[in-house]
Image 1 (tube, one colour):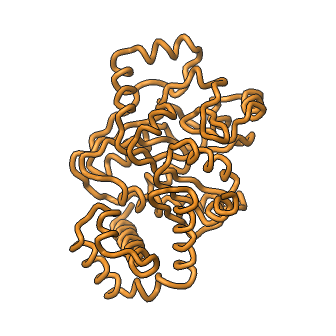
Image 2: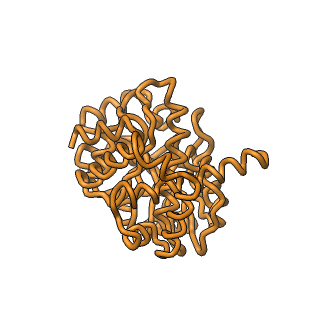
Image 3: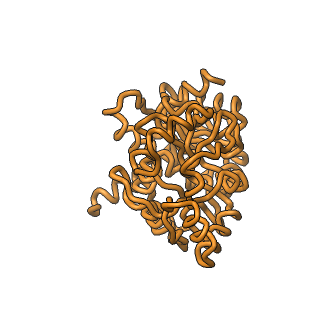
Length: 325
């Protein structure tokens, strides 16, 4: 990224943050103290952000019209699903050709959601996939004290996404954080080899760290034949069909879950080296980031399963979730 594009990205990040604070204050009617508590900043910071938003015309431009409509949608989703906060990217991704652009925009909104949710001293788990890569690409340089970034899924490369450790390393670099990568394959060739990997002291220590997370940032896949699990060569079409027959509606950290967000113990879960769904539930904050209405059932399942406190979705998925509620 050259200096000009880097400056532009920082300006856009700042504008997005100003718009978010302004929408909370003017759109949802939260007090300055309530906003400060939600964003984990001082009330003085909120006052300054609101003043800057007014000075730059963000309030006039962003609060109202479509932005206010989407903010109302976020509030309705938050109430319907009992979430702490919801962020909506104003994009529609029903057409496959539009998905790449929708992912980029969602990544920018999710980066803001991520920074709103994280606190100094947090231990944060980062997953892998196209959606999380978009977040890593959009994450601005924002040093946060004493943060640890932990890779949730072992190493794997697919045609769609670079090695899984790439997402964790890039986000850690932008935050000035310590990064703990998971030095094992995401998928072992046999169940016995997976057990041996997990028992190695260095890997065992890394997996143990994943049981004590303050925050996780992850996405969820559906169980269609073109899901990333199949595209990455981690599951066969026949295995995916068996999972659907068993009631699977989503895939999180390379594991199938049913409509209630509970694990379905089918191949290749016995060979996976990654955080468990229990690890996600145990985290104090779970930021679930999803693009596309075709992942509505999977997203609802993750929320029902207690794996999300914060949600970031595109407009199409937001409407699908609200309709389903």
